[in-house]
Amino acid sequence: MDTELWAVRLDRELSGQEQAALWSLLPPERRRRLDRVKHTSQRQEALCAYGLLYLAAREILGWERLPEIALASTGKPWFPRYPRVQFNLSHTAGAVLAGISEGAIGVDIEKIRPVSPRLMDRVADTDCPEKFFRSWVYLEATGKRDGEGLRAVIRGGSPQGDGLYHQPDLFPGYAAGAAVSPGCGVRTVRRWSLSECVPEQI
Image (cartoon, rainbow, N blue to C red; front, side, top):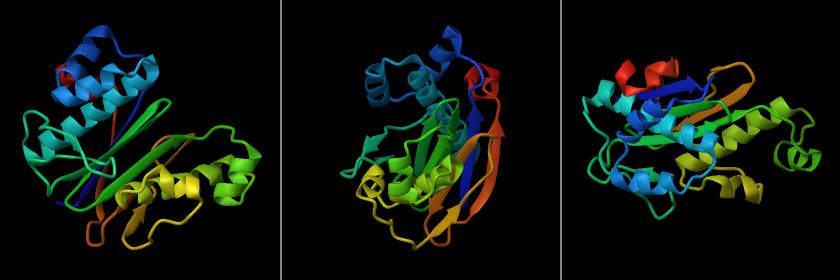
């Protein structure tokens, strides 16, 4: 199984019926985790992220439901019953990115927006928000692949460079990236509509 990237643009709010349908896909521990998210847009982004993961797992692996998802000691989610199936999720204002692979994977997507000059200088040595976010998603995706996450960005260090990095052009105004293990090249990048991300619409 090569790496597959799946993305969806959240161009509207989810209806109550759509939220309920996506909620039904979640394993119990994910429901408890999401139940603590009070901000409506962040909650919907996370629901769509799991919707994308479900779509990918159903199409690629033939799974009818998402299995239990646990957190490794680094905080990275994984499938304890299927350790050879690696995945990673990311969401930002208005967009979601999911990646699934047979090797370690980290993905990130960010909406390009104003950033403080101090942060741009610290992370990317630039005064251009687009260049900043392209650097940011590289650090984030590579850090997540290696189990470091934002710590690599906050420290201002560089994640390990072994492996492959793919920078898909998904949606205007967004920067996205996927870092994968050596030998796990990105085979497919698929873009879905929000309606396609909901079970009743599949």
